[in-house]
Length: 370
Image (cartoon, rainbow, N blue to C red):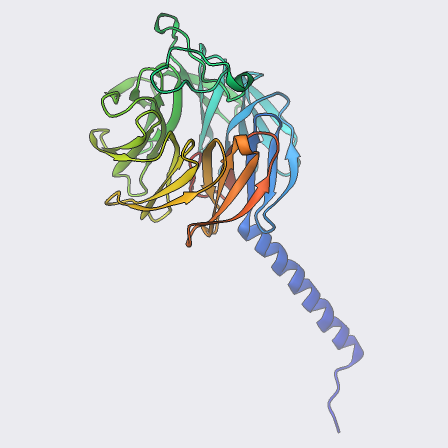
């Protein structure tokens, strides 16, 4: 006599298979995560990394959102909003703004660490694109000043930029750390007790004690190249990399911020990041329209990845480390690069002037890292 599965058990088997398929799909999407993109002419685009599609947008209640970061639990997005001079704390589940924290004029770069956010702001900066090499003091009007706060005053009028230290639980600024004119990138020391910032206008890197705000060290980088912008510490905590936009190179420094060497790049390097293992270094070169890849130990060039897109400043790996998303503002798109083959595989339209990109779960990138 043949053994037959009773109809009730067959139905249960089919239902179980359907549930398994549903949860497996949800698990895949969750594992691949979400990317958040700040748009200078819009809000925050939400990208489903399983589909590589924009699925929604969070409003920020003001124009020109730029720097952004995600809290450790992934529940809150911290966004610097230029027009309102504050950061918007956005609930990632609902998209609602939980709180606005007043920062100061021209908030730009954001780093989140634990319950604190560090936000650079530039009191004397004016709207406008970065000046061309050799014309730093001539404010440009190109593109109607939409590049996001890099016009320049005369040196006598420059006021030091600052980094606001925000207590995210209390929802308020607890202290301001005074940097140099036009503070740009922010990085932490290996022990997490100090802050390293790049100061574009006076060509310096400065090291500050986070608890007191005291200036600990100042490094003049002008002889290596003008306009330091990106700054990143290697995963082993032994090496800093600072991109020098008008030097068309990056500066390698040790863990005490002592310069070691410069390495040539394409035109106007900005965003910089290591991979998670610290084996490779990635640099976005805006005018060269490329993502340049180097050996992170020898700094030998591995490959230039042509992006064929304009104003590619910031980028991030996906959480599974298989792809890299590069925000290319003037081309209104995110360029997707295969992290192993180092080839462009897709382009995601984002027609509101994308500035920066981060992911949840956190991944290595020019703005954020795990």
